[in-house]
Length: 261
Ligand SMILES: Nc1ncnc2c1ncn2[C@@H]1O[C@H](COP(=O)(O)OP(=O)(O)OP(=O)(O)O)[C@@H](O)[C@H]1O
Image 1: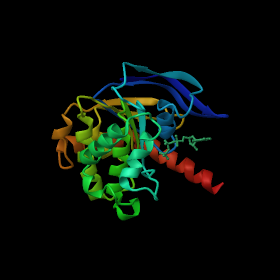
Image 2: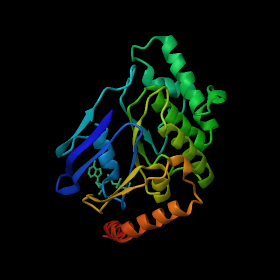
Image 3: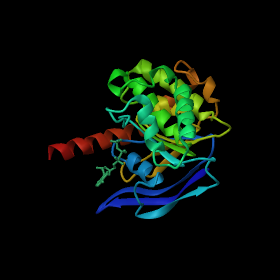
Image 4: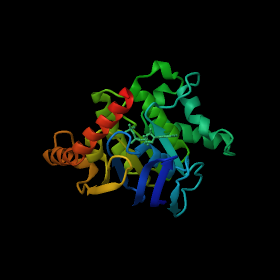
């Protein structure tokens, strides 16, 4: 499925948060959204995923979801969103319950999601027994089990240490390649510019609030060939930072003066 954002504008009362946002993301593509604090990235993600209605503009989808998709538009969150009293497999089962799927199909999907995310040996573990990286793998497994077409990721790695983040970035690269003959479209919000240059095909750089698309940066190099030590990727990350530095500093000042006053 292709997701199309068409001239989205959003306000909370008198506060305009997003202005004139249009872009597309198709199967197999990753679009990253970066920009200064408070520019509306998470709001945009919620609007794209149908959790919030834009003040004007529309979100369109083209094409059919994969067979057996329970939820074509699915989220992965920064804080993992796991139920602490449920085991790993219990958390993955959650969105499948009440879906009308046969129990053999549900068990098959859970096993498949566990093996895809390297969690098969941890299916009975409780979240408190897992590291942060493992918890986020459960979040990803749960999202995969519903067979989504479009995956929305809101700072999925920001609660993790640098090493774990690096490992999970490899997992996300694999995920972006697709599975079961099916390719996901991914929208990825991050503050971490290196995550954007490592993972995205296109990076939308938003201005400070109200967030508008001020640049779209295309990263051509195949994802598998990108690495933390790659000079080209490091250069593109620096250029990205140069692009948002002034806006980020200004947004920071605004937020700070808002807190003081
Ligand atoms: N439900 C809401 N009601 C009123 N204002 C809101 C609501 N949600 C967000 N905002 C405001 O909208 C603006 C954009 O918030 P949003 O969380 O989308 O930005 P962000 O770019 O994701 O921020 P950050 O980078 O800090 O996570 C902020 O000023 C925020 O305070």
